[in-house]
Image (tube, rainbow, N blue to C red; front, side, top):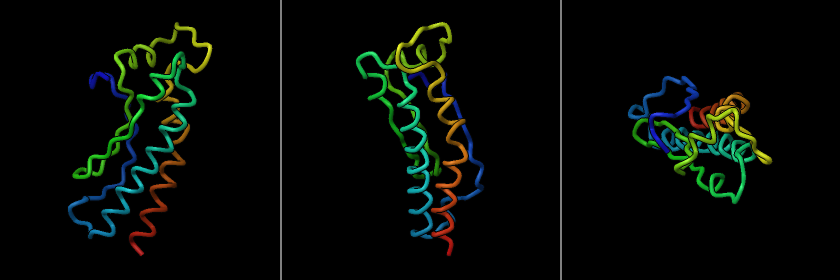
Length: 121
């Protein structure tokens, strides 16, 4: 996927991973992964499907140093399928990742908050 066309939803939590103890750091990273996987799973339900290659290309990558999660689709046509509102999709729809991020933002925040509460007890 072209890194030029990346949709972002930022959950602004002001946590510096370098200042966390090992348990807290592990919880932040696990919470990020869980929250991003929740969004990815929902996005896959909205992703256009012909042979399933686009859906199968979805992945979550966690930057452990920066405590950042990224969800991407890794096909040559992912951005085209995502951005083109004029395409007809018998299964799925355009803006599948954007819609999933917006629909699941509160769920992702709640997931991350749960992990953080446990880590900082």
